[in-house]
Amino acid sequence: MLFKKSMICLAIFCFSQSVIAADYRVEITNLTYKIDFTPRIVIAHVPVSFFTAGDNLNDTTGGLLNGQIHNALTEIAEAGNLDPMTAILDQESVQNFVSYAVGDGLLNGGQKQAVELLNIDETLRNISLFAMMLPTNDGFIALNNMELPQAGSVRYHLNAYDAGTETNTESCADIPGPLCEGTAQSPDDTGEGFVHIHRGISGLTATINPAEYDWKNPVAVVTITRIQ
Picture (cartoon, rainbow, N blue to C red):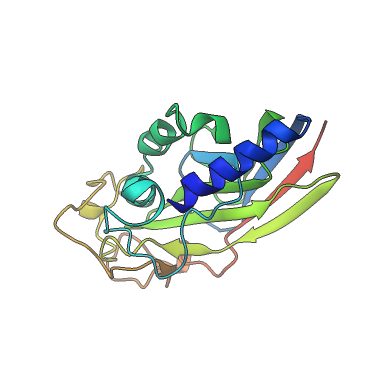
């Protein structure tokens, strides 16, 4: 309801103001050694938070849009699957209040990639970004509801979050991606039950060695530049 109320209020504002479009370049840098980021979704949107620490993403009726966002974030955190999120953003009732771009492919440790958000009107003042961290059970990076620059550039450092929807077994049977090639989701495992800062790789299995795959926050830096 909060998301819908925010959209309605800004829609009223939009009709009373002239719309000025802007273009943005969003550069994501992976600061880790060996963690991969799955394809990244970058969203310009009306000011509204997609989640907060402590949220129970297993709750399919709570949060934004009656649990739809909870489900979409779970899909990203456990499987790197952007389809549920893009399906939400493409809904007729939502699409006028968002604009998004996707960074394709895995973003390996030490690599950077830029995507562009084009023709963004002034009602879309904030930005969010999400991607899964591999190899983890339900680790994800998030830039959540931060402000787009009116001019020049801004830089945000991103922490690693644990979605709290799957236990951190560190077993390749439970983790997708090129290292593990395991099952993307565990529907019978509800994890810790709340979003929190990720505790990293503990070395519970021999395959995912913490000497190579553990990290310290921040895990990414995002530089947003207004280019037009």
